[in-house]
Length: 276
Image (cartoon, rainbow, N blue to C red):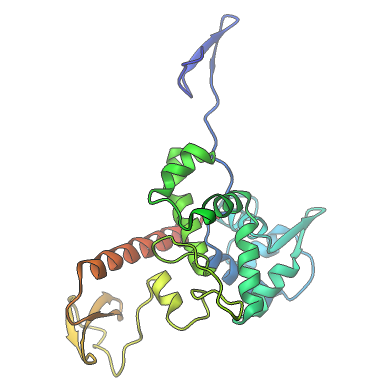
């Protein structure tokens, strides 16, 4: 039955059978930034050595290493090439040690690029689209069509790759591939001032005292520099966000801001469900 739907019952030798549900191609479901932070934390907590999965999961804040978020995060660190597994025990790779210990410089640039190439799907995307100079506008569609990702997983896979490639300084916010400068650096890596804020949606730190923890409401105008408007947004629990915009933002400015909020929403979702 060539046209049978996936999951639809079929008859074979007088028995009903259900076709297996299509599985998506594997990819790390946490971003490279999250993986780098995790391996840095593990290096700080555990030092060097080889461990079963349970101590790794506990060091990352999870009780259960047999499955669930803890196991998936460890799997992601392996997919990025930051951990290796031998005889059921995990240890840091040279690449993992580099990301754990170096926070800037060309060595970090090289390590981030190497980590981004470790997952086969991510390497295939880089190889496929770098010659064209940019990623397709609807990357999730290309993932389904050409790369073995199911429709249900395509949006998350596309966002995780895009965030990871931006963090490594390989592509910009519009999905254009970035070349290296004359000194061997890429212009958008995470150690450059302002680059991580642009990629990850973090906002400039407020100057001076903020509102009292009991304040409420959004769009509270604050002090701003020339040519800027500044908003302090009460988030509850004494927390706040500070948003600094040009005095007269353009439609493109607002579109980019909306995009960054969507990426931040994805990061919150990934941190909450922790599918890696």
